[in-house]
Length: 187
Image (tube, rainbow, N blue to C red; front, side, top):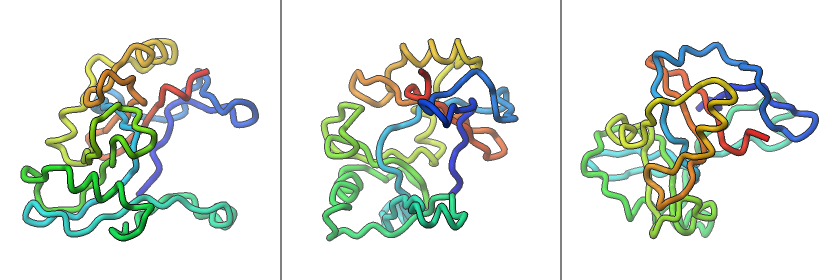
């Protein structure tokens, strides 16, 4: 798993907010903009429409970062572990009958996860890597200039949240590359 690059330069010395300098060489014309969902990043292995493995994202520790390990990876979630309880609840509450066999990355979302920024009534999974599901969070007419994008994000509501604001945008290029921006990135 690779971290998704933020499209604008960030001021690391002060408030960590973005500035107008575009730092990615990205072909936005051949990319699809989708809502960035605010939850817990997970990966599910599905066989015959059944979840057979649940993994959660692990970020490198401070010591690992000092050793040059910067990219996150997935580790198994454990159903009996208290810290993974809500991930499994989200899996249980989600219908995977239309999902093909494979490993699919997504977000565990809901009332017990990350403060429930989407105002959802129950925990659930959204597989943003599954193309058929991703279509539900496609955003239209998204600008890519600093000022226009900042203003656009201020007024966007989540496509799956309950009257909740959008967290941000992820662009998916046809070659597999991705870039992002979050509302909180702007000063």
